Length: 260
Image 1 (cartoon, helix red, strand yellow):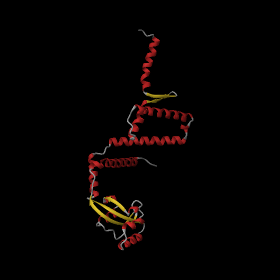
Image 2: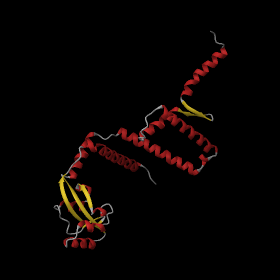
Image 3: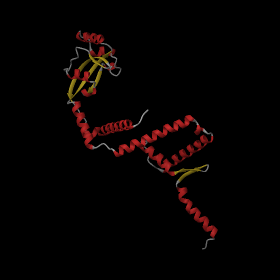
Image 4: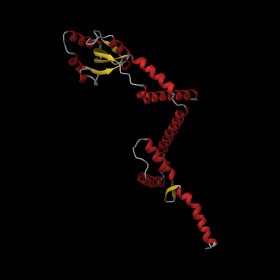
């Protein structure tokens, strides 16, 4: 079998064009949508935890979405909306967000939190949490006089749970002031200092002042603290240390920047 030169030329051009077409998901009004855009969208969906595994069905849905977007974008450009100052400002903000996310990801990758750092933070947490946890109630009021009135009523035999209904703490007022079980580190220092000085069944006989107002605190009971194992809290500790590193990095960059 022999090929005529013109026929051979057509075949060669078609073969050369195959890779280019394979790299495109679709072509809309002459503008190509690269397959890499679908790959990126699918990877972003996976990172966001949408739960859909990569599959032909998912890729078909993504293809339709990208085609629809391209049709709409072309129409928006045709109408000159891309030249709007407001649209340009929004695009600039989106660009900044994308670049910042990329910078953060790059920094976290190059500056990982070490296991030694995690253990040190966990040990610090254990030391600050103490060896006991407390089941407490409290009544929060705005001024010292109201707190003293509550203490007087308690001494006269009133029930703590009943008086707690007037508490300014919406989270516990309806539950008789019940704060559940917690370690002292969960509370602000004046509160925790007063709490650990109480014996089960006792309440503070003088108002406890914090930045939230005045408290009357009652200790229900205490027990040995149940400190979670390091493996249980490792993800939270890692995240907290990463955020601390990122904050320090941002402050370092800002300190070096010339701001007028």
